[in-house]
Length: 387
Ligand code: ADP
Ligand code: MG
Image (cartoon, rainbow, N blue to C red):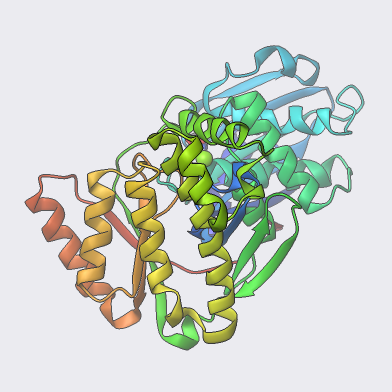
């Protein structure tokens, strides 16, 4: 953490000749369970991880916003008044600029607030399914909220991050990632009802049970604004419309027989994934509360099978990672994030981690796949001011 703070501060000073007014950071997230349920108004259970994006930020005396990142050379600069005209055109800078724009859409007066310099560094791997996009959005959101004295609530900032991603970047994603990044707590998961936006923290108790969560990044790149994500989303909307409900949240397991009669096979399987996944999230929350994390392995496994067979968003690398982890001591494993690449997670006893790592290296080499990046994550605190 101190490294990225130092690097962001150093780059801020190199670019602006000033020291930043402050440093804010926000974490990536892992979704424990509840995949492709968020945009269906359903349940999700992510947690914030110990990989963060930091933003060094300082107000300017004009009305210009400037953004830079250690991930990319150059500085992007434009008047706050011109944000609306560059939507979707600024590459990576769409994320931070989109948040400034989103704040303008949600109550901030962009004609009145001072300009700002934002310099970003991160330890969240990009495109690995750990939501580096929410980390950058939420770090910028808490920084601008404080610097511009907006006093917005965390749930409001989560919606602004989502607005930035949907309408500025152009990726039709739900509100889960920003909620986890803004509301996470150490050793807890964020149980979010995406219909009511009610949030409860659920103790994970991982350390007490001798467990950890292993992230297995397949390094297969995914792209939400172009990939099958939008198509899956459209399928769910079609299914809900045919069933006469406003979203798939309105139906349960008991409605699946009727859904099978009314829907074509593909749409039915998309719907079945969402409906059963919602139930698995509820079952996971109850199991965690009543019996602790050792009791949730089967639910994680069932989630993976549903994503693979019904929702069809897995890839061979994710399936191999899950199988290999389970064969080598994990108590549960599943792909996490939107799919089509990215990462899988395994819930594993601490003493099985190195065995799983070695087995993954061997299995991926045998299949001719790129060696996966494997690391453990710790449920950590959400966005905050660092200094
Ligand atoms: P992820 O699963 O990591 O969220 P996305 O495709 O949703 O993948 O978002 C990744 C994009 O977010 C990157 O391609 C880049 O445009 C932007 N991004 C994330 N972190 C940073 C960063 N530290 N600096 C600059 N851009 C970033
Ligand atoms: Mg993302």
